[in-house]
Length: 164
Image 1: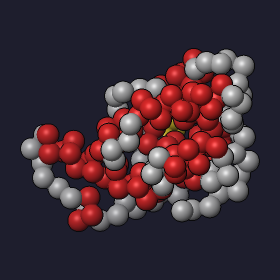
Image 2: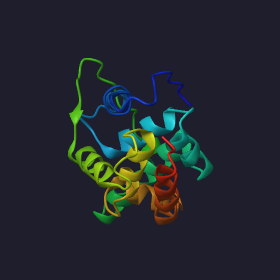
Image 3: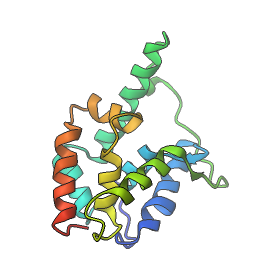
Image 4: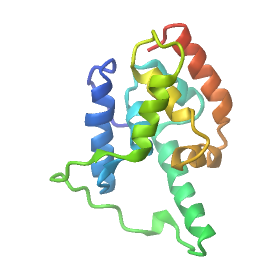
């Protein structure tokens, strides 16, 4: 896993630096929820990253689940493709990905999460990510065999007890 030493308490590090790095790596114009998920798991010393890891969601497992989700989504449209057979995206270091709609939704859900007094850190962002049953992250978690609802309950409880 790529090691990042930014202050995990700084939400901007997750969304702007790490999420943007993930989006660039993928060649994306926007920072989407899946980039935020990968950014969270990269914060190895955070309670949110540990919780993801305990659920089997390491960086490699998340990337594999996202690839499977992509393949399955294309298969629904009648397109058979294997992510492993495609060339890797060319990271565009000059691109400045902006926050995408799925990340805006994650932020809204994170802000709405109880308790309101809990700080806006990695665990609150994880709650926001897990709070939707639609979208690429939810489908990838399902593909990975992760019980999103149970993980959300665990993250919500951790947030309520003060885990960052």
